[in-house]
Length: 89
Image (cartoon, rainbow, N blue to C red; front, side):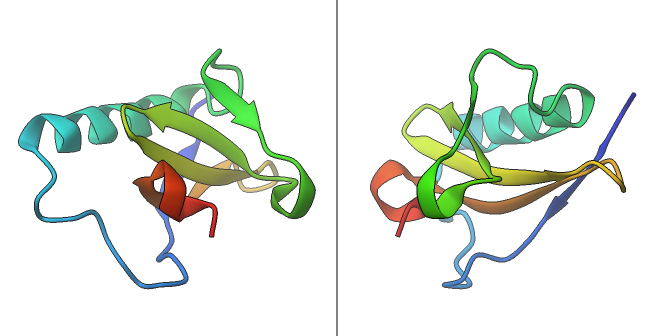
């Protein structure tokens, strides 16, 4: 069953840097489309722990996508996309 993917603004209000390469943007867009089909059953999706419990992360090159899944609405909410060191702050 297909889920919807919805992007939320991060707490800092930042979006993907304009300096991100076209290939990087296309790779992220492709991955977000794939998440709609299999949000948590992918081998590269890891559940988070601690204060991030209930969220999942996926690595895309040097970027991380932090998201959570609303199983009632069948919607994937993307909260953060950014460099590894910045998304966990």
